[in-house]
Length: 391
Image (cartoon, rainbow, N blue to C red; front, side, top):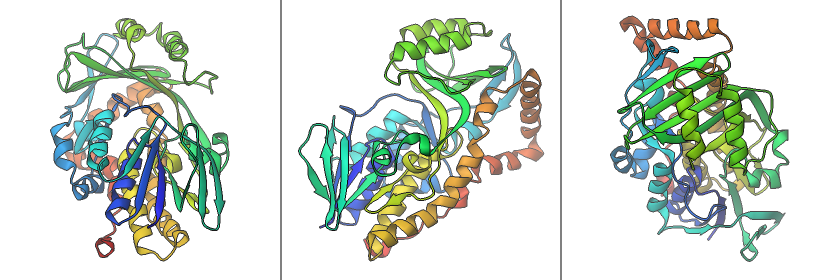
C-alpha cells in the first residue's frame, strides 16, 4: 500500500488525507502544533467550494457552526453610515470560524488516518524507493510521497524547493486578527472603518460577548519575530494609536488578548507545485490572501490531488494533472486578492470616498447581480472533476 505523509493538520491537510484514505492510501498527517489551533478569522465557501463540503459529508456540521453573518456597514469617524457591503460579498454561502472548520475536518478523519501532533519534518531525502523523512522528535520514516499542506510559511516547501523569499510576493500590507469584548453590541453583523493606509473591520456572530477584529495597514516589509506576540502588539499600537472612531478602545482590548494572528499580505508563486515525490497543496503552493477563495480552493486542491493519484499510473502524471486543473483558478484568486489590502486600507481620503460611492452604486437593485458575479467568479471558474471510478 502506498504510504503518504501529509504535513499540516489545518484545512488542506485533513482534506487531502480524507480523500487519500478514501482511495485506499496509507496516510500519516504530521502537525507542528501540539494540538489543533483554535480561533482565527472566519472563512467562507461559495459555488463549487460548497460542493466539496457536500461531497465530504461535512456540510451539515459546518452549517450548524455557521456564523450566519449579516452585512458589514462602512462607517465614518463618527460611526455614521456610509455604505453597506452585503453578506454575500464578505461571508459567501456559508461561513465558519477557521478553528471550528479545522476541528470538523479532524473529527471527520481522525479514525481513518494517523495524526502526529507536536512534531515537524526536518529533512527530506528522495531516492528510487521513496522519501526518507526525519523529524524534530519522532524516529525517521520512509514514505512513497510527501505532501506539503502546511500553509504559506511551509516547511516542506523550504526543504524541497528553497527558501520562502524565492517564491513570496509582498503585497505591501499587513493584517492582524484578534478578539476583544464586544463593547459595540454587534449581533451577527460588522462595521468597517478606514483612514489613509489603515483600516479595521469588527464583527460578532456566534459568541456575542466577543468581537473579532481585523486590522490592515500599508507598510514596507517589517523585520519582526513571528513568535514574539508582544512585539507584534507594539507594531499595531504604533500604527493605529492616532486613529479615530473606536480604535482607542480596540487597542485597549489588544493589550489583553491572547488570540493575536499577525502576518504580511504575501502571495506564494511557484512555476511548479511538485518536485520529484514531493507536492504542495493549498497556501503552501499558491497563497493568495483575503478575497482569493484560498480556503475552499485548498480543499478542492486536496480532493483533486488525491483523485489524480488514485486514477493516474504514476505520481508524476498525477501531479501534472492536478496542477493543470487547479492552477488557473488559483491564479484567478491571486489576481482577485491583489486589491484586498487597498480595499480595507485605501491609500488616500479620496480612495476612501470612492469605495463608499462604489458600494452605494453596487447595492442598487440593477447592480446586485454584477456584484455577486464579481465576488463569485473565481469560485465558479472550476467544476469538480468526477473521480467516482477510482473509489
